[in-house]
Length: 546
Ligand code: GTP
Ligand code: MG
Image 1 (cartoon, rainbow, N blue to C red):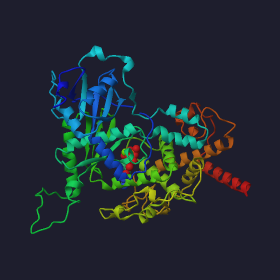
Image 2: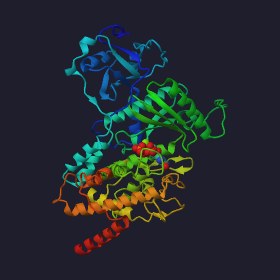
Image 3: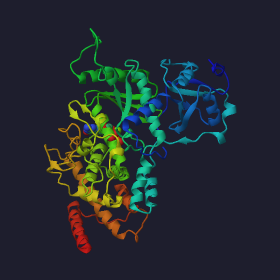
Image 4: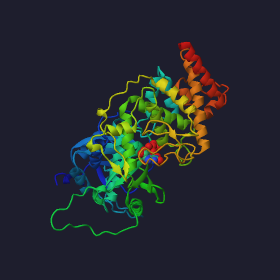
């Protein structure tokens, strides 16, 4: 082949990566696009197929790196990031370039161990001529993959001029960057190579916060093993005298099939997939999954199959995020606030999840006098023929092209919305009412769970069934206190700009407050008292305006 002269020569040689280090850290910028979700997914999945991940030696020279790899094909894009070592993500213009690179790559010979000869797209780049390459001045710039530290975020938002700017800053600082998104799709594509050994037509798609426009740097990577291309959902009608079907093994239910597929693929990931460690098969969960850590990216991965409703919920959030820029700014800020106050947690349990919290923000935005976003029923009514979808008998139809939606007439500022969000949920009748984004109205609770948020597609389910009374009370109390603090801040806004102000005062971890750092110590009235104080303040404000 034309690049064969590269095998023995110069600066580098490649070997398939068999074992790697640990996680991770990020950068800025990533914008919400107006592409439909399916166009976005298709484009990114295809791009990921043409991309490789390379573990690089220290102080690598970028020019030489680029020149070396360019011999295998045209490089469309590349970047370096740092975890516990430098990695390069390199997008070639075609998959044949990767085939060429693979052809010149060797399986390493190890002294005391044996390498499992699985040829993935995760490579180790080795220097052949150490002296020539170790020039610190010309070494590459590595991106970080994690969110900025909380203290840095507080400093940035305290430097903003308005509370509106503060909320936008949280969103900009926390959102997934372009590079982080690329890496997420690449990891899905690498796992697909394993699953494709059994199911060549399968695809692995990211879902959840990695792609719903609400992802924070460092969030987990939810993956969906899509076997629809195989299982016959897309089959054409037979013609002629005969039709042929595959002779298959039969199992009791779709759930059993999903469990056995995930079990086998989980095993393969464990045994063969370089960089994937800590594999846990959680097959008896309501939604069976395989959990593992992808070390080179640091992503915590959850692989599920037969989970099309979650994929559709992801698309719904993607649409809502695109309707109005205030949606993302408020969701990111509320998620950040909830995390600081221990309302959400990375550990599964009785906490409110980010998904439930997002539903609460969406519902609040639907409930404004002049709504900022449409109800799900309104989105369904605007759907075209291509948007129609039923999954397991559930109506999952909604408009998928945001450009078909009229922008909201609501002109409320984010400062107003933040204040009102806390007041709204500080006095929400959780005891008797349920939150329902399909109807955009409170409804009588059909069951006794402390918090009831109707699943938008499987309408008999409660997405916050896990939440107990203690956790709900914690949320209500924190909402009331924050409403109270914002009211006070609003009044003293221009005069008492202390180290942290506005949104920042709500994002100071409670340990710091008790130590007296940041915001001034104040006697915090009990939650019920705040509620009444807020109500009387609102009454006074109304009288003054009249
Ligand atoms: P983070 O991972 O916390 O950043 O947010 P996430 O939105 O990714 O949440 P999570 O990883 O818990 O779940 C992934 C996706 O599964 C969500 O975005 C939803 O689409 C879906 N999902 C999660 N929990 C539920 C639930 O209780 N009901 C339904 N219908 N879907 C859920
Ligand atoms: Mg997730």
